[in-house]
Image 1 (tube, helix red, strand yellow):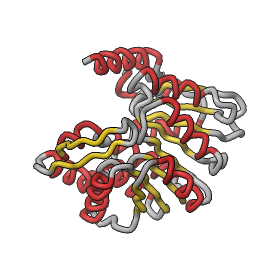
Image 2 (cartoon, one colour):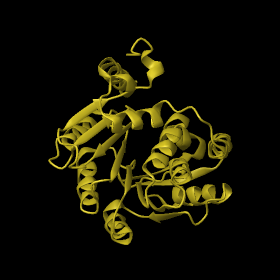
Image 3 (cartoon, one colour):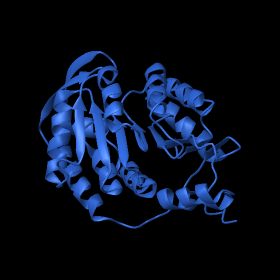
Amino acid sequence: MTKFIFRLRQFFKFYSAAVTKYQLHSPFVYELAETVLDDKRWYYAFRDVEMLRGKMLSSDIVLNIRDFGTGEDRKEPLRKMVRRAASTTRQGRRLFRLANWANPHTMLELGTSVGIGSMYLISGAGAASMVSLEGCPETAHVARTNLELVGLQGKVDIRTGPFDQTLQPALEHLKEVDFVFFDGNHRTAPTLEYFEKCLQFAHKKTVFVLDDVHWSATMEAAWSQIQQHPRVTLSIDFFGLSLVFINPDFKQKQHLKIVPSSWKIWKFY
């Protein structure tokens, strides 16, 4: 309950400060907000992923979870894990549109979970080369099975093990990252460490996407430090997903909070 109240309070703080695309001056950011937040088009990939979500939510399978973030091993029903850790429908569709907008050649995901986010991302990115890292072997197996069920087998290279062991080899394999999605560790120090490692393989057009920066005070601390990083020139907060850009062509560092235009219908100006 305490976490729920924290997130609710942070959402209202975010919402009160957020703007819509109509208050944006940058054509780049306007196009991004319009594409990710206001595009209502429906794609067959949405149907396929959500059908799998429905099947997992009714499943009786129990997974043996190995959580390298907390250091605990536990049993957890698949349906509970989907509710707790998988990308929501709204977030998944935003990931799809983000990947489609960015049109990356290489993608890296930290935190595969059961593969819902992975399926949305690779469906949106098309022919991108994608590596996804997952700590838990059984969870990774579910994700691979899901990718096969929607005809995406071979599209995502899922690598299992602690990020401390798998991240550097994945980066060296990709050589350069166009799109990075951080969704695997919600603590300050590891988030900052992984961001720094990925920066070494980034270029000025790289898109960094972070999940749940308002999940906790520690994640908000990590988000604040990333925003202030000397290489970061633009950050955009959609609340559920937050974006970072390091393009030096953005001369003035900006930090923006943006909501769909329908969330503030009185701001059509």
